Amino acid sequence: MPTTREAYLKHQSGENRQKRHQNDQNSEWSIRKYAKFELFPHTIKNSKHKPTQAQVARAYPIAKGFKYFEHGKFVILDGDKKDKIIAIIQFTPLENLTPKQAADLNIVTMFVHKCKKFVNSISSGSCCWGGKMCAFGWQKFMDAYKLAGIYLNEANIQAHKEEYKALMNSFSQPSGILGKMFQDMANVSFEQSCELMKTNSIPAFKYLHHQETLGQYDCSPHLKFTTNGFYNSPHCNNKDIQDFDFVVSLPTNISDSTLIKTSDRYTINCGGFVFPDYGFGIDFSEQIGIIQMVWAAKNVRHCTLPALESPSHTCMGMSLQINT
Image 1 (cartoon, rainbow, N blue to C red):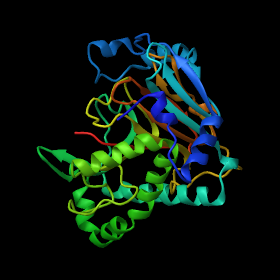
Image 2 (image 1 turned 180 degrees about the vertical axis):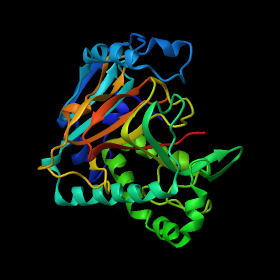
Image 3 (image 1 turned 135 degrees about the vertical axis):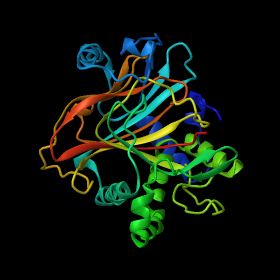
């Protein structure tokens, strides 16, 4: 899979050519130099150890000095290896969403909200220092993929079998919406993920059975989602088998996970998604809209910083990845 600037800019023939050219013209390019930096020095000895309030307070002003991207679409390159893409980030203000885009996002977030009843949140270890992280779909066990039992709330599934079955039968639409967003954001990375799924007979997260035929937008075996001020340690996704992960972050109502309205009083203090070794990131406190990102998650350290959110709203993150 090419991860180079040339691969990203490659034009396909036919109807996609004009669209790709327009996307390239609308993208800004940024070069960032690598310099290993420990935002949380205590993790050198124990990466799973949650930071104290004092350690978080120390990290905030340091992270404030990073470069933060805020609008438009950016392609960030490694300053020492200019053919290496670190991340592609795109911002869409809430007021710029079309009615269809807003409706599609609500389909996805409301589906995720219903999923919460049937999954257990992950609330310990370096993968989650605070807030909530959940996953839904398939996980590899030995040489086969099985439904990720570690995440499933079997008691609730057994108690509400028909509701769970109906929910799973409605998975196709939100799955397709996310897959299409990934494709529109970074087609080369999307195609690589689809090819990995087919080559390795990996089931898509929307299916209850392993043998189902993959669809047009099936690019991941599971969906991870985060809420409630989620934050974690600087890390690489070492178990990923694809080059890039895809994530969508958006402001939602806690009550039903619907997208907030432009008239809502949505506030976040602190918080952000950062790349400490490259000194850049996304400041969630400056965003009221949709953030999409494709990034080299398995090779570049990244983390989410803790945030103070308004009582009725939360920044929801949804990510697609393929790992072992």
